[in-house]
Image 1 (cartoon, rainbow, N blue to C red):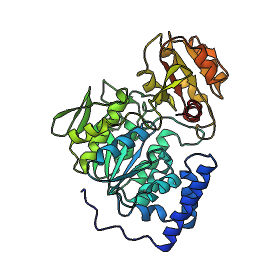
Image 2 (image 1 turned 180 degrees about the vertical axis):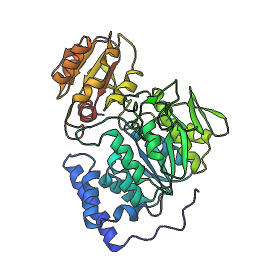
Image 3 (image 1 turned 30 degrees about the vertical axis):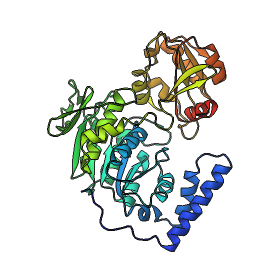
Image 4 (image 1 turned 45 degrees about the horizontal axis):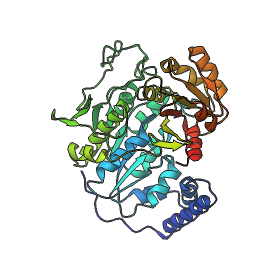
Length: 415
């Protein structure tokens, strides 16, 4: 399963031109201070050669990773694990639509593996173009409702798009929507990775009936759709492999969710012949992922940067911050990349922050302030990050932000 036939075919003159033009566009974008340039570079390259993504992937053993939460981190953990078996190219910075993926693969001509994070909307199309060996599906929950399909419709699209795929699908057995999406695939490896957020999975994706959820199990009492038996499982601080052996997870990344990401990553690595012990040891190297979990110094204070983009992500993040009286800064924007609809704030249980001194910033700080007011939580609204940090009582500050708010904070603190 691990080898790929032959050496890469040389790129056609058209493909070479597309790659060169894409790199030039990316360089101009970087020089203008507009970010990494990976998206504009990919868009230019795909305009010149619409089949470029497939051509760039043809010599690689490709892994695709998709989910609502955790895909950037899991992509990084899988890439780290597979480096034990050969060179890896990956879209490590999270540019996860076709243009960003094309840009990333254009830099991987000598690589053996391509580990690619894919936006949920584009999974089926990217799978068609790249012929992946493995597809990892972690979770599906409400996110960017103004842009993305409702979760049940997204699961249905995945199910249709992955129907009959030759890829090994490594899927979370604890998320009914993921199980429904993966069940059309002939070769699925089920991982018991857990599911903290259950509010998008109370009705059966197969028939619409009410799901029964005793303990960690789930099933539909009407049509019999049920949780499959997992062959890999997260058990406390260990991964259980298909032989029942327990392998310790030692990560520098915090929280249960990242242990679940590591369990899935170990299952993916095993498909390519990398043993769990080797895979998990390599994952220990990962300290931060595109700024997430970094602790930075700013104005004489320590800030831990945490990204939470939707209700499920906020729930996981609340479980890993230091307890009261640790100060917390919350920042929410609603720009294009975040989704412009902030109604999701009402799905988050902000009551869990009771006892923390809370400062609120970001474009939509007043939307968040109303939500916190209703939750009965004390907070202060601040105009800027600098003001919020100056107001925070002593202790390491936990800073939780959604996508563009997180990027704003990183720029301000020089991360």
